[in-house]
Length: 252
Ligand code: PEP
Image (cartoon, rainbow, N blue to C red):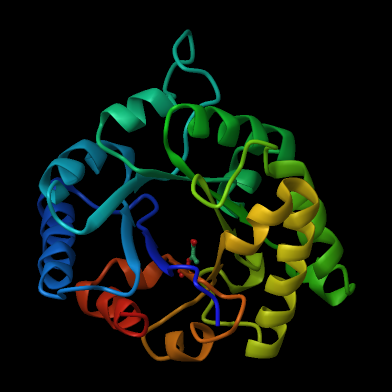
């Protein structure tokens, strides 16, 4: 039995205006605060425009707040970017890095993700480093190799179980309603943990590895009990309080 504390993280992506975002985060915080001793950590990652307001609203509650990306520098001439120090200053505890949408839309490489993770850790944030294979890579039986090389390329040496979380998200499962089998998820998570051990040694056994990709209240209870699954990174289903809470409920 693992003693890793699960994390259920909501990635709102580019969704949410002030009124609805504050209401959604407030609803999750209220439900979470009614649970005397939750058995998992709960996190929302709103768009950058809302992180400060939501962090303020969540202050003193059991709900954590994170951002969806950060720059690798602390300050400077980087128009439109946000530094990890600023994200920490806005009240965030976590930052998602290397999401497949950023790897695709912004051509982020493993090296870039690693530099961002280093900077985030230095700023006192917890880095959620995302990895995962495309459908073509899965069809070519390259899932384990791709994930292992993303771990080795994206996780900095200074990562620990305390400052880093890994999210395994098969690209073909994100937003599609399709998921791998539970056996596939467990196999990949175990292999990811092995690759992580090569980077950070014994810390890997204590590091949380989340599953992400079409997690819903209806399937969360299949994935959450798997021995190497330590929570979920949730996209679409994190945008409705009842859906997100249904997933939290499978861990709590
Ligand atoms: C995600 O974008 O991180 C994600 C897992 O999305 P969805 O839950 O919608 O598949």
